[in-house]
Image (cartoon, rainbow over all chains, first blue to last red; front, side, top):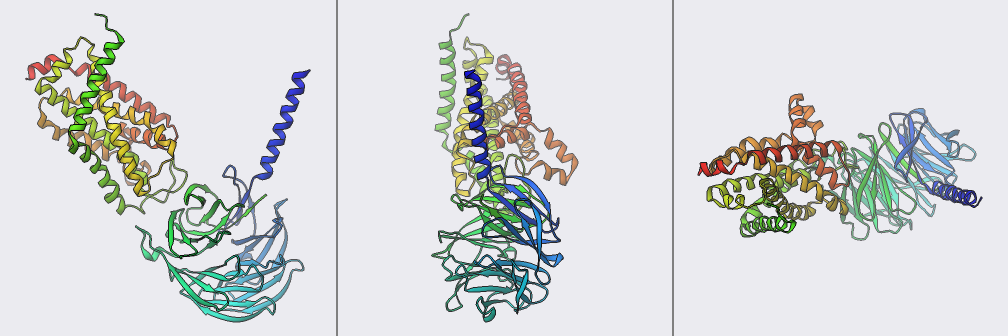
Length: 326
Length: 265
């Protein structure tokens, strides 16, 4: 009798521990541009646990604030899809304008700022009412999009005009432009909303812009031993929450650069897969995940050691990535 | 005659100390054994740095630089040259007569040769670890425990290559023949293996080249070390390396005939 009791107790405790572990597992969602799918990666086991069909050519993806919904730029379907992450079902499609590629969610968790690459427009959509709030003329081939953490400014980059466009989120009007180097692809605000990082793909550098004056204060260039300078094409940027590091994906150079945000010196180049596009941190920012377009995988980087520790095969041409913390 | 284990140990120690003293006294040999793989690592690999970061192969979990790829092969290169160089020393020993002194020992001949093999292997290990320490400077950083798990692999490979060396030395009559060993054994063994390029690359280049490489025991020795260095075990590589070691040890023991050495002199 005692034995049965002990066994039951043991099983109950094991089940409890297992459920706690399952609950803690973080999940990465990766958009596969060529497969029209999302790959779901369990960050405890580093295994792809599901592949979900979505709209055509999914690229930019963002989580809602409560992480219950995922917004997906389905570029060739000309829409932004909304996925319920508890069921993995598309519950809504938002009017995004043509060819949405990158977008940013306002801290109010409601307004989505979308870059329409083919139309030289930035579209602002209310995610609750599905209403288009404004369409703003920006430069040719708009691409990167970011909203400052304080919610006051939205920024868009245009690949052909080579500009950073400043949008007042209150008036939803374009207020200023800053010229940067060729083919700006991605923008990222510092946590205090005071500094903006903008990558120039053909220019091969990253401009650091003072938000108050909208002037470039620094430019970071890159040099990797054994890699031709033409192949160094900065795209995605991620800034660590502690304000110490900036990570820049260098596209066909197959490396990401780690930059000290105080001195703007490159501390390390980390080898990842081929044509690295974008990145995402896990919850405590101990890991950084990169999407490698041509090699079709996601590389996991140990942030403290600044080393790639694992590459996980996903679909064809992975592009966007987010990590759901619970 | 019944020999006690203390006498066996005394004999092993004697052979090991002699090998160690020779290693200490020939410092240039130590440095040249290090310079060779380091040149490969620093100069040769620099040009091919970007050549390999395109496919993930076992035992690596992610993309690696070329330096990281060739490091295990270069460790085996040290063992290969040492194994062969020691075979030269056997010819020298035989010519100088010191081999006869050793073989006059009442202990069985197979034991003497195994002592010799193990001594060569243990001395080679010092050079391999010195190389790995320097390789840290070019970011060849296997996991810390990997240095320990690679130890038995290094030992087995060293004994295998030593046994091949001993076998060859039993057929060489004069010192000068060592150049032939370089050309016909060391170089083909090293280049026609997975030391410098993974087998799938060889297969891309030519099917017969791939076939030769995958029939070369040195390929399995390199793969055994490569896996062990990253705390993984490759059963096939282990089986081939172990079988080759046993085969060549037996052949060397059989082929090493003191009477022939005396006649040769």
